[in-house]
Image 1 (cartoon, rainbow, N blue to C red):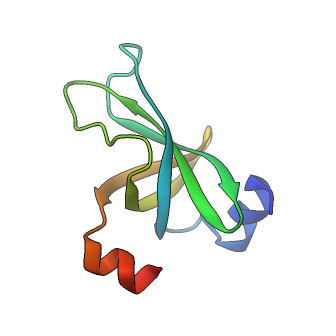
Image 2 (cartoon, rainbow, N blue to C red):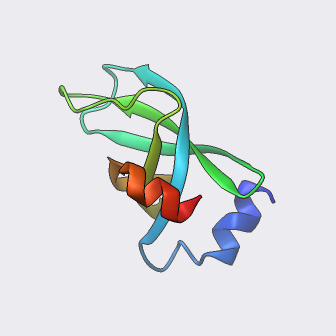
Image 3 (tube, rainbow, N blue to C red):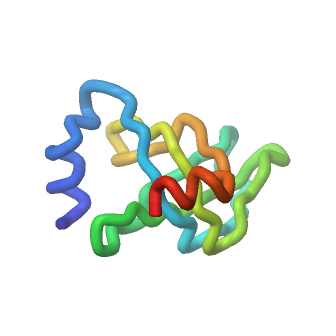
Length: 94
């Protein structure tokens, strides 16, 4: 499934969507005034997040399983909030 197909399938233009995924890329950038999370790609049905940290916000390590609230913007997917899954949540999702 392409990112565009995922975008359409989940109607992300219309509302926030809870998504469980894994962090693939984590990088720091001073070019953003706010914390910006971008969906990087989709691997076998699991969402993969590329993350940019700004203003001292927490940066999740690569490989972290997370739950994100995703919304659509003119520049593609962005994540409104993200948190690490607990072990019991991972077991339930697994």
